[in-house]
Length: 316
Image (cartoon, rainbow, N blue to C red; front, side):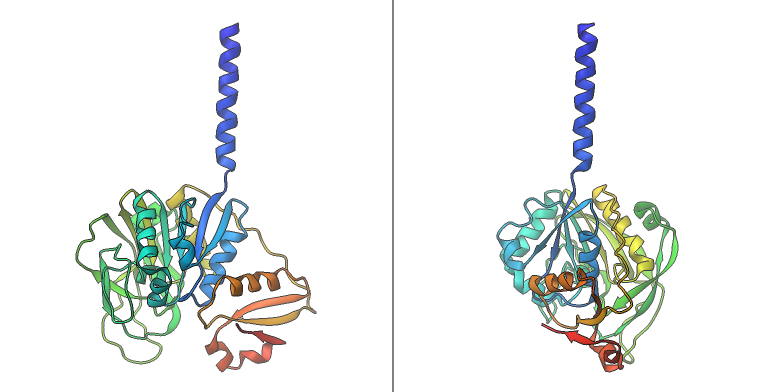
């Protein structure tokens, strides 16, 4: 009887330990500093901040150099410009990012998040050199809705449907294989570009059939990188949540934000600029105000007359 009692106590302890472990939030870091721009950064912050299963830390280049990733499981590198992002981190910060992933951390990059990890030295700044990929060429293709085709392996690994998805694209790198990367032992193409578009005019280099999403092993860690923005459209945000689940084993369920009243002040939040943590926090402050309906807006949208839809525009 005593043996049975001890066994039951041990079993209860194991169950309580498992429940406690399951309740631990995903410790995520989102880079927000020089080189960050666009609606995608805001959407990434919303996904991670609105999920009760995640604990989000906004990190600058200096934070990364100071060891801000040491207690994190996931690093998200969002859209923007790779050169300024690398410059903000510096070589010491880049070493920290590489060590974070090599030691078992997860890396999720979108658009610039793949560009900064390429194995190349482009004219516009240094790179992390973590993925054995380089650009086909670097034209300014513009922004549009792209058709991205997930293959069977991509669908299985992510746990999404195979085939075509409509995803926001904005000047992401068109890539091809490069020289090997020492710690990158595996690279899989999960999805390819099923379109050939250029908003601004004729460009050199073929987009159709090139990688849109890749999975890589880097040391003991795993990387997932897109040349587009699955975080932007509500219809493709499922891919982001699937990617986080595949990388970390965690399922996130972002809370649905309440609709604002019809009489709420409509505020356009300018995103065509490199912004920092303070500017992002201002977005969330406005977003929390019941009497304010804040909407991200780009310079192109303002040029097209969208400013008339807002009561005011917020710029840094």
